[in-house]
Amino acid sequence: MTPTTLTRMAPAAPTDRSDLVHDIRLRNADGTSNPTQDVPQLLAHIEMLEQRLVAAEAVFPDITQLTPGEPVELTIYRAEYEHGQLPLGLYTNCGAARAHGEALPSREGLPTGAILTWIPDFGDAEAIEELAVFYPGGDDEKEDSSTGYLATPITLTAVYDSEAEE
Image 1: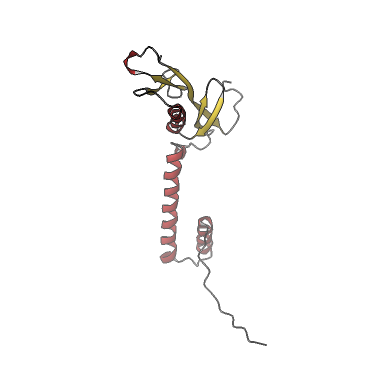
Image 2 (image 1 turned 60 degrees about the vertical axis):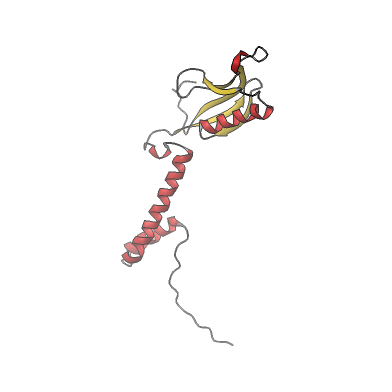
């Protein structure tokens, strides 16, 4: 039989950051914390959280400005084709929904000088926008018109409000 040597190893650094915070709290509670080691780990954890918040804000503007106790609302945007009620895609910002709507008529081929522009249904920032095409020079063959592509804001809520407008 071969002898076995047991060696005591230092605990491995937690891989999950939530484990890191938990481990530091436990060491602090039992009096074995090591500020020389814990502080740099916590600072790295804070930096990682800040990067996550910046990334979340880039995708969902104002997502980090939620108020505790208030229902969460989030606006997404749907690119769609109006005439067939065909949804094309869902996006976290209006610019992406517009880009999808503009790509389709552009692929179909627009005459030289044709201008695509988005026209809101009304003046509100949350208005449905419709893609229109304008032709320069008053060409009688081509008439300025709607393309049928829409960028539609959709508000998502986390809870049902029986008193909200339907």
